[in-house]
Length: 228
Ligand SMILES: *Cc1c(COP(=O)(O)O)cnc(C)c1O
Image 1 (tube, rainbow, N blue to C red):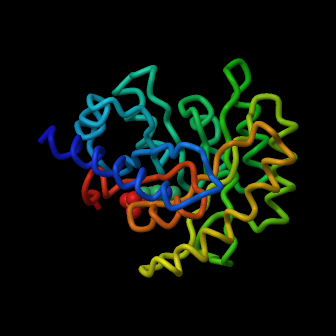
Image 2: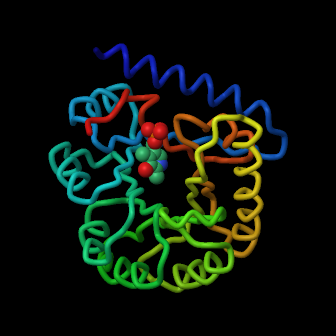
């Protein structure tokens, strides 16, 4: 059992390295977030035993339960799912990162709830392909939200997160990721602490990295399929 998650993590690191070789202008490392939503606690523990320290969850209640049960101060927990404003307090109390911020009200609530703790790391979720069923904002709103996060005392703007339409062909994946990546330098030039371009999942991380991603969020390729 231990070997499977360990070997998946190892395999992924090899594939990440291979994909990084394809790009010339993006020297960053690629940070791997293990997306553990709807995965049992023992699998997260297994990945932790392999030395993995970044985990992502989509549902606040499920995430908070796991965070409390595991009780490891050296894990960085990333909130990735849609945010209901009444859950902002739980998110700000228990998570280290929120990658799915997409409106002003949420920024205000997270900021208030984080008072007294180190700043919460925030990414703006962008949605550049007009997918109405998904969260995220267009590029104009992205810059408005960035300014609000910058002004918030208890939040640190780290970058953008994207979840583009599913494509099976590499060239189509790459074209979409290139479009998202074009937004990133505009943000990082304006806000020097911005260092995160979070894009790429199990099915498309190679193209995401080739386009400049420096953070990928991978679930099934590490843990196998999820409980429904
Ligand atoms: C579920 C999820 C992932 C991981 O998806 P896989 O296809 O299992 O790798 C990454 N990012 C977000 C925002 C997700 O909701």
